[in-house]
Image (cartoon, rainbow, N blue to C red; front, side, top):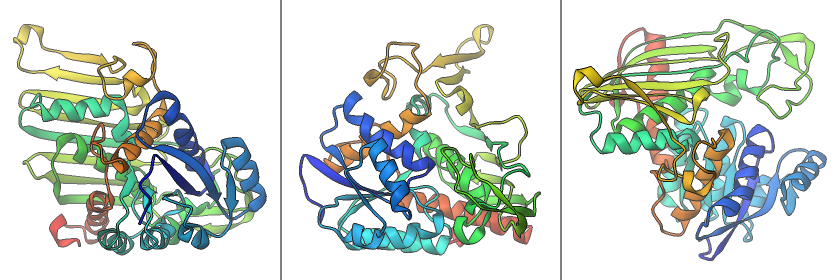
Length: 396
């Protein structure tokens, strides 16, 4: 069973783009917040010892390992932070939970619904706590939206529109693991729709009950094979060979849905939406008001109050940088905005609070919560394949 103490030893598995974000978060959390448990950057794990040593030196990890099985079984490790491609989330999480560790896992929960189910079952049998990195919940503006809905500011929710649009996956990008179903499970769907499904579930406080129609499309069906490792970004620095391979995941998935409170919804994810770098957003309309958010303006939350006299109704923009907004009091003066990396620091803070038995700032998804998002993703792909509506209750 994980040790109860004032500090916690962390093992990080994966050293790429997410490795940097999580390492930065574990490093920064005690500099700006005062968590009840202090994180210790114990061991970074990956496939290349040479690359690991450079990574560990830069980010402050005390040790390196190329053997994740041995690492997660070590008595010196308390929490395992999994940042690997989706197809190995399940075996790593299961092994860590069996060894009595806490587990923080990147999204989506797994590459397949079967793997996600196994992870939930393993969590139920384990003593360790589980957490899933839906970090956009921890943007101050999104956390504020969650609080406003809980206070009844929107009334009865009628419409939800959500989108996650990027344009990085053009023909120049080689056949990296994100385009391989065996490793990723799905493409833009699991990568991007997962985030907006989780955010809308989180903000509305309601569940998606039916996928009423869906479409999935792969525009680039062949890509040049990858010959070098990607750098700090999603595909930055990757090089291509002359030979090509088949793309086995979607480039875009759109679907319609129904929420448990009666609202209808639309979701759209695309990785070739020209002109959109990271447009991750939603609009929620209710009988008393509406909210709108886009991560490309992540410090802003738009609010429409339909309860004031018509002469003064209109969209207002809340700059969520005041000290009484979620998380912001630990950072900078009002108007001195926060960025992408801060959501991961907020996540680290709430994980440490939870492990100390304290309430997180806003709810933190565990494996069971993330499994509900995985069911919705699976239902959407089934609806696209069968070309008919799918009740989420039938997808287990």
